[in-house]
Length: 95
Image (cartoon, rainbow, N blue to C red):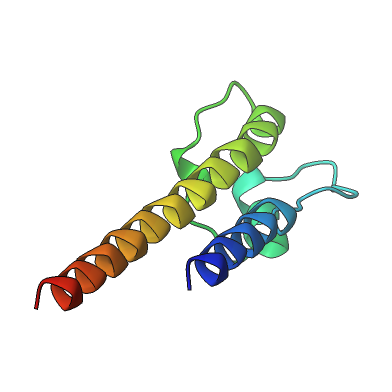
């Protein structure tokens, strides 16, 4: 069971990092939030939360923030699951 949890966490982390792709050609007058919403519709960190000096700066900072948020969410869920599993095993062992 623990091996399955580790495998799922590893696969989830790989997906979290690999699915954030916003590269490619951009129009001359683009808005970073629109580009991010078009190319990565499922995101945890809204592009409006990222502060930058211009649109290109926002476009470069957002993927790092999104990957950190996704990996943090996976870690949080994994810790909750591991804690729940430990409590379940402890209750069965004690009676």
